[in-house]
Length: 277
Image (cartoon, rainbow, N blue to C red; front, side, top):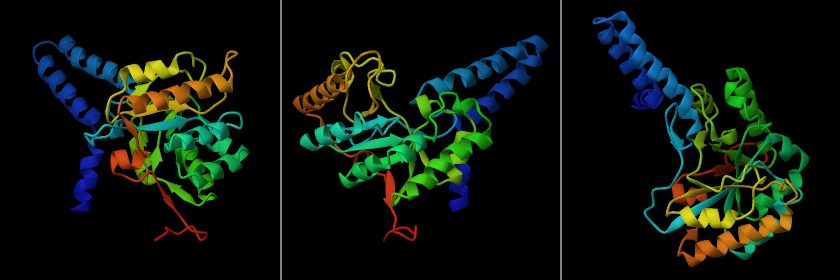
């Protein structure tokens, strides 16, 4: 039964679409060989475009929103931690009694391990966002992709946790990612609501952009890195504060992502690196 379920998970929409594209090409070729190019070209175009749609589970299962049917949302922060923004953000989240998931990079976790510990001590979850946050990671060889994810998994074990969730840099996926995540016991989480802040390069009006389109069960994408282009951390924190207050005014409760998905984001482990009971 287990083997059957594993096989089912390995059959992605990309594989099914490819099969039908080939079948259609063979049928069309029986009329004229040149016609076979049409479905095959269409399939290649789809493969090229699909990775740029974070909610589309084309190459692998991707979770991008909850299914609670309640007035609840979850908040996630990518690319950190950052000594300028993460500490004040944690204080702000505590004032609003809100829990978040921090998708951290291995490079920053090494530099700012104290912030990883503080995130965990305050009851938030930490998940894998690759080691170096290479925006072109999905174009790299499978070996490089595996190493980027594995290195961060190994590093975060030092903080007594085993992440179960991975978010690809820039939300982009590829055909190799599903197999690599399965090997490391991870699943893929993206998002359904964002302000297109470009990694805090565009924070003006961030709260309004989120509040304008937020819906129940959304997973919000934000970044906890120092703002760029002359904007200050205080201005960014003010936008996050406005967003949290606005969510409350809309009757939307901010809940831990694990609760929204009914699925664990990470597991606490003991000093011997065995799963905690």
